[in-house]
Length: 141
Image (cartoon, rainbow, N blue to C red):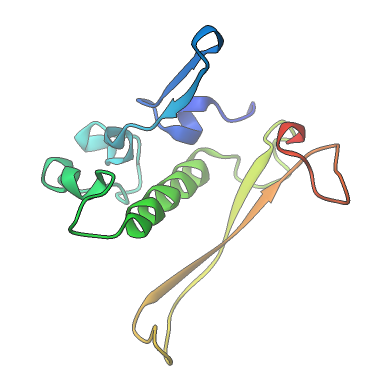
């Protein structure tokens, strides 16, 4: 399995818009990629966004119904799930894959202010040959 592709990491409808002449460096995510495959999205595990047209406003920057933090949390979670779905089965199966996401458990919080919430844990690993003070620079991953 080769390294993950742009579409496998960001969704099949994401766009890389790089124009150095105009100082434009963008990656544009398309929420349609985060739907289930039966709705035209990339998720094959029934974890995608349901009924996107009804929820589209929820994801607009500055939407008043919900905080920006919640919107961005959903998008980061979607990216983690998408990469997990498309990655090699085991972290050592593909040395070209520079990121590996390992699920480390799911539980229901039983005490404190988060009681009753479901906690899903991941370990995200990045692989490189370079590092500054044991931390790789962005370009080294």
